[in-house]
Length: 330
Length: 254
Ligand SMILES: Cc1cc2nc3c(=O)[nH]c(=O)nc-3n(C[C@H](O)[C@H](O)[C@H](O)COP(=O)(O)OP(=O)(O)OC[C@H]3O[C@@H](n4cnc5c(N)ncnc54)[C@H](O)[C@@H]3O)c2cc1C
Ligand code: SF4
Ligand code: FES
Ligand code: FES
Image (cartoon, rainbow over all chains, first blue to last red; front, side):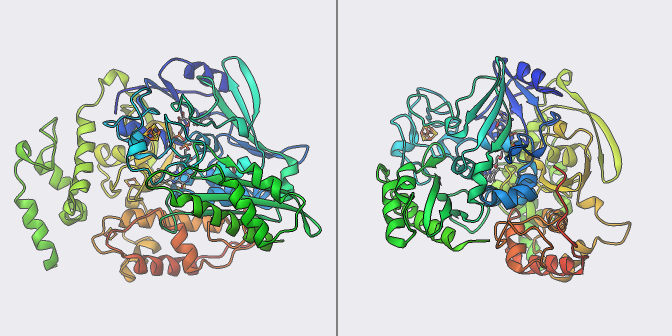
């Protein structure tokens, strides 16, 4: 590991200031960045330890929403009584990821910023546009089983590996940021990004910008009765998703008032299936409708040599998740 | 145990460090003798069972050897198994390497060094974490418990005793991580934490005794290459049933 300077920040202003220097990175739980530093994928000159910042609280908001501190641990978040009862989809998604040990260390902010598990990204001897812009994408002609089928570019076909974010996207979470030029708030849909011409960027963040909190809006608690996170992977636990589906329905009588579907493992970012959501809205739930929605969600998908199976898998997973959702009531 | 003999012979046959295919070129103080002595606590079989395993141990030694100049080191103070410990550490030092290399506590094992196997599990302020992905400096002030700190004097921790009773191991390499993980896991369950296989996360009341499916899921961060899982599940089940059940799910202190 390359030597680096270590700074312990005690307030957000100094953390942001320190992290704005070139070559600086935040250190939260360390479960992703330390791993990448061991591999030489990340080689920061300075780590800014943000674990002492007062951002670990999970607080109910006056309007009925819930604020998840960026430094709250994934395990504490998934076990929070308000999150469990009002936003169970988020708890399910967190619990589907990593292991008990990792979730005890991993923070909500770090989780959103975790980097792809593309094997060429991890292997510093291989070309990779995300790690070393302009060197090419080894996955295009290489082993691309865990890669994306939606929203890819000729520069990068990596998939976003996380779980929690699919639930946050489905529930229209809002990300609170603090950067060198002040605070701002962005819908999570604008947080992650597609690779396009600049796959080295995973998120729309300015250098040194700190996630301070993630807000779950009060309205999204309407989905609490019917939501499900389905994760399909090579083994039953402790593995990244091949495909995952965060599905949530809000019913009005026998009709769907609103549907939310967000896919994981299929794109560079959590993929909201808005066409599918539109098809479901106002309709009565049923298998033919779910199949139609699943087809719509994957209509624009293109597979590569080893990952074509993901297209059919994602469709079936959407159907399965929606079926489970219509069964689950309080 | 006769089954250990081939491995022991293999160890004796290891060439000297200078031309070992398993160890890096001699760098710093690490000698073959020190390497073998160091690994002695689990039995050489565990360490030498595979080249990747040996390689990861060796690369840790390498990282140690080319440590940064002392000027970049920083003060660290924490408690390990109840005893205060203070020293200067290179910022690159993981909690795992601190324990093993600098505090002579080799009970905590290094398997993958990447958060993928759980062999390095320790308790930090009572919570289980992978010490291989934890930078020591970010745990300044923490209370760390390793496998060496679980027993009360000569009396084994109930989880240690249960692992012995139920044959919860074969080579023993994953065992200290399994035991620390199980201790942390039962505390999580006691606090009412749900898991991926919990039927309805919305139900926050008293928890039913952990089913085998729950134990397997909650322990899935610990890989056992020997496949001693039936014994591990039996040991964890026994201890969990003997524990006072949580009256209600206590709130997490986030
Ligand atoms: C073996 C293994 C299996 C895993 N399996 C899964 C899985 O199945 N599903 C899943 O979702 N995840 C999985 N993970 C990933 C894990 O969830 C992430 O590593 C973790 O959530 C990252 O959080 P952290 O706090 O440790 O981040 P760190 O490693 O500390 O930081 C990660 C990145 O985020 C940046 N960062 C951290 N906090 C902030 C902040 N507040 N503002 C801005 N930037 C910040 C850091 O600078 C760094 O670039 C797995 C990890 C491992 C090692
Ligand atoms: S898919 Fe993206 S991350 Fe993987 S090799 Fe290509 S550019 Fe790199
Ligand atoms: S050595 Fe830490 S998880 Fe494998
Ligand atoms: S007992 Fe050998 S790895 Fe688990």
